[in-house]
Length: 281
Ligand code: SF4
Ligand code: SF4
Image (cartoon, rainbow, N blue to C red):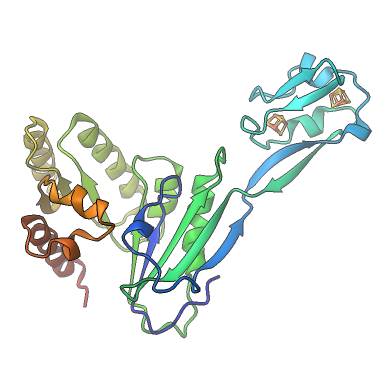
């Protein structure tokens, strides 16, 4: 668990652990304040050559459902493909000599620091080939499960990954409100419908923002109709504007990079709608 400065009033969690990028626009206030925690939520098989009697059953009898075992004809031993291994433990159970061990391996890292905006950023990064993104998201969220003395902490913003997979479910669980960002495209509408089904399982209130709302697409009407028919809460629209990639290239939040731009006005409108919806201070 992180020991964070209790005077901060907000924390941002970047739970898009396969591609975290909020650190680009929320850099640390100084280089010395980053806390790092290694996370070991992945399991992998480890071959124990001293126990092996080279019977080759592990390969000939297909112990591994994930295709992670092959045979080294030079050494007369099995080879483990660590990227394919899911750590299920079947090889250890089936091997007559128990010549495999199952060990925890590093699946990612969590970093936390005070930003130049004087809030906290906490984010996770997965190790290449790790298949435990959902567990890492949970570790990121637990990292800031703050004790009672963090009285000033009144807002935790959680940036989730795209899609509806395990990391999204891990991100959504336990939240007070979900802000869904979609785009007027076939995949945007498709994913929006599916993620709403997931959110309904958790019974969490949500609102919708349509990004790139000004691109020419039949799907803007379809999304608007879908929202209207279902009486969902549309919090606002953000138009596509080249000022956004310019702000990203400058590694700045758009509201700081172009405070008088139309996009900033749209984002502020959404914030105000959100404030009145969830009664933020
Ligand atoms: S089944 Fe076990 S003992 Fe036989 S070759 Fe494979 S690892 Fe070695
Ligand atoms: S632990 Fe499971 S996935 Fe990994 S090599 Fe053994 S059987 Fe295959």
